Length: 288
Image (cartoon, rainbow, N blue to C red; front, side, top):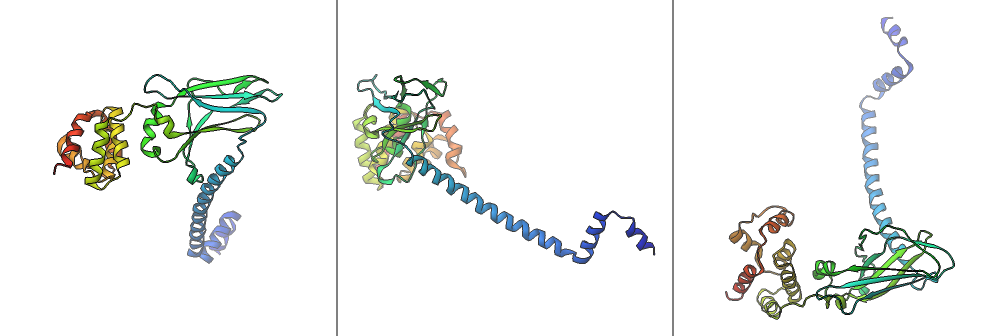
């Protein structure tokens, strides 16, 4: 009778829970664990679906570009005689529609015509500009950017790969427009050329190491431009069978760490090892 009175005084919720616990015991815990496992698997599948959807949307977005959009004339040009060592790109958007248009920030894109499914990261130059830009009927908007640093940073990735550069932008009313394209290698010609001694050194090193002459050449070109060894140049040379990592450990006190490239970025920036020092090491490689 004592237990009966006790149960009668419990709330309905507590009663239901107690009964379930007494009847099913560990079964409920098992069911809950199973549900959580299924939910976790579902979330993983959902994450993969979201990534796939984003990639698909990018491709569909690209397919909506109107190369000859009747509302705009959109062109990309380069200055043929800029200041030595610079590459100036100029984009022009002309509103030929009868309406006022507002365009968002212009982006610059890299494309490999032999693999158009692989969408490369685009570049945005804000340069203190305020967007969107208001363009009236017949009005022309033009902007210029110095593309030099981006060419230098992407040399290893894009040089001699058949890459095209083009500009894109969209209006706030859903117009997607695409400019004409320019050969990446044509823009690279505006950079200071690689020293002949470096070009010859890249040939010798590639023959000695079995690495890519193109990869070694562009790494030395970046070494010349930056005026110091960087973590990216180090990685590029190491990937082409030149043991520069061990050299930097033995001669310059760098430490071999697990996540080498992330840790060495700051170390090499602080040391600022001059190209002439690296040259001595590289010449020693084919004298062995």
